[in-house]
Amino acid sequence: MSSEMLMKLVQDRRAGKCSGIVSVCSAHPLVIEAAFRQGLMENTAVLIEATCNQVNHRGGYTGMTPEKFRIFVEKIARQVSFPVERIIMGGDHLGPNPWKNLSADAAMTEARAMVEAYAKAGFTKLHLDTSMGCSGEPIALSDSLTASRAATLAKVAEDAVRERGTEAPVYVIGTEVPIPGGALEAIDSLEVTKPNAAIATLDIHRRAFEAAGLSDAFIRVIAAVVQPGVEFGNENVIVYDREKAQALSASLDSMPIPILFEAHSTDYQPEKALAALVQDGFAILKVGPGLTFALREALYGLDHIAIELQLETDSTGLRMCMEKLMLREPEYWQRYYHGSDQALRIQRHFSYSDRIRYYWTHPDAMAAVSRLFAVLEDVAIPETLISQYLARVYPQVMSGQLVPAPRELVIASVQQVLAEYAVAVG
Image (cartoon, rainbow, N blue to C red; front, side):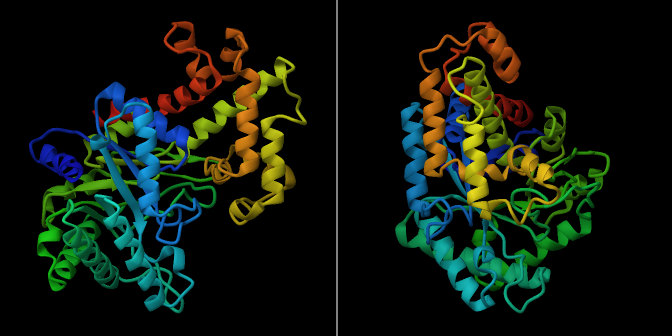
């Protein structure tokens, strides 16, 4: 059972074993396929998470409800012969965030409907995030109000699984929740969560769950979201400094119940830093933009190769298609990128925030990627061009481990990132 797989992480830490799991936060089919291929190689479970904006009872920006997203994920798993019983489905930032422009009552009504849809669809890892203020409220809420609203959502989930007789979920809570998708500007430093704040957060949630008659559910709280000092902005990455997080890590031994920490925004962290995070109790490593960043790098590498082989031109290639698309429909990047025209152009394509990821499922982008794959499909791509434009996977091609077909090269590029996480989580 998938929730038991996650509970085992807590048990492992109590037994002195450092183990963890990578949380793949992406709805891109090639990223999900790469995750399942990596799971087959490592013989592990695969945790796929959807965010509240991405997938919800109203469809989200992907157009998928939780049930449709689960079916979508399981279809990809079957295509690569990954056992569906080893898939853990998670919901990220579940709360009123997509509707925070509404009144608290209206936003929480939507949030309850969303959590019910996630629970009924068989998602067994639920991150309850009610930390944001709604219309007329402060931007950040008190811990007590956040915990009360989280307990309200947990009760919805508990009622839903009890009604259906399905597996009870595990929960992730926390009030110091990073912005989904990374910071909005350059960052110089971060304040690590204070140990007493982390302990107090869990205790406040314990009392809120008990007040709602959810003591049994609180035992299934496996992790709290905290800030260990990792983040990325549009142009830079703050790398984990375990010395600064030493006291926070030690606070796990003082929690009201045995739990782990969940680290968000671990994208672009060096492998050594990822391993240190797991060793220090930040056992759930969330990654999303870092995976689609690798996907974009590989696609643009193939685009350069097609142009070098005179199969495409600068004006007809993938990058130009994406530039035209993002200029024509700027809603996903315009509020987040700033600077001169040149700075905006660079950010549109190469920002660590990777807001280009929102465009890959657009019909124009899908058609351009399909065209790129088609023009290169029967071409013997010179190894020297793979070295030049797809250096991440060049060693695999040279050793004969990887067939240099365009789709395989892209998936392998994403897998290279996931392989670093696989080493880190043990």
